[in-house]
Image 1 (cartoon, rainbow, N blue to C red):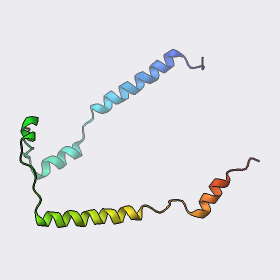
Image 2: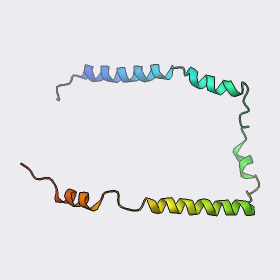
Image 3: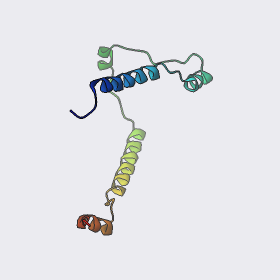
Image 4: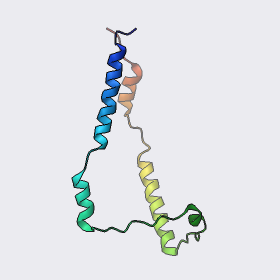
Length: 103
């Protein structure tokens, strides 16, 4: 056995459960105030059955949407290419590859 009693482990678990339970009861007045400040009666999206979503018309792309999507795709490619160089420079990589010498 590791020297920790079963009762200590149970108390530890009980402490976690009680802590999580109490945090679930917390109120966040800043969030409530922010939601109610602009519009006291916000219009939430209407819930619709899944079958109704499947029968909706296919989305259409206009010419302006096509240009915007192409520009966005090019921007994403440019950003991805900027992430391709190695994160660790060559000198640091060589030191890491050499390893640590034990005293």
